[in-house]
Image 1: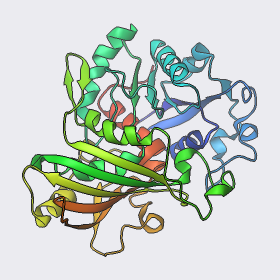
Image 2: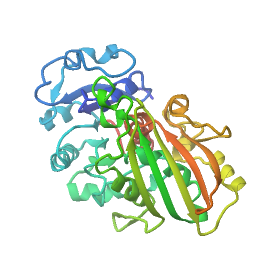
Image 3: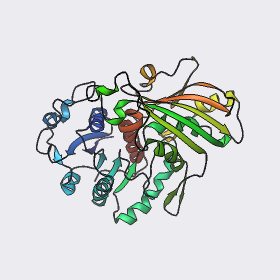
Length: 361
């Protein structure tokens, strides 16, 4: 690739925005050329705007330190200098919807880390290995928005990626009922232990809105495109509990599942080890070579040991065994700010570029 695509990060000063900045440093296809945030950050250099609140483990990448932060609300100005944007803003749902549509209407593709458009019928919500076919609704969305090149694509909720890939590999066996409990890291709330000392030595058995997302979003991912809209699947029936636990990164899930056609343990393990999706076929830069890794050890996967597998883009599974009420149970783990947030969005952008949906302006 001779020239990198120019990327803007809208909401670039928050935790997810910082992760985008970090991930895109030295990316082979993309280069951050614009960062936008609230008016309070506008006019400062990026280094000045995140001073004393840089939350990533490594330093601020040199290439972005002196970028002047723009006002995210000045859509035309931000869009003029980029080929596409990542959006990770902290605003009300209707404000996010309006902002993302405004960017799309300038002819700028928007890859959103926000939840605002996850249920907009013609907006694809994508895990690239699982439902790349949903990108075809972009054509209908463009017609609605009145643009030839702009559109919005979103990534799903971070916690479902700890168990949906493992279930997706088993769809041929027709799962009918799923019970999942997720144990979610504090970075999923945009915080670390300095920000949130109440989480030390503590578990909070409630995360607002999370259980509905965890039960419904998998059905949209497994849905079908019908007349330019995504119609969600009617099964399996999913019930969840979502719990905040005192770990920095990594969402872990315990899962119980029953099937219409019960597979053997050996069949399940074979499906997991062999599963590949479109990113692996295309050899996308951020794609894990092994999407689902199974651990034979009884005490794995562990959040601290295994969240970074495949540079945080793989999914770990373990403790598969038959259950006395359901057919099987297992444990899943994914990195919530990599696979589940910024990394997943970067992989979506790579897929969109490879499939011709994102091009240089």
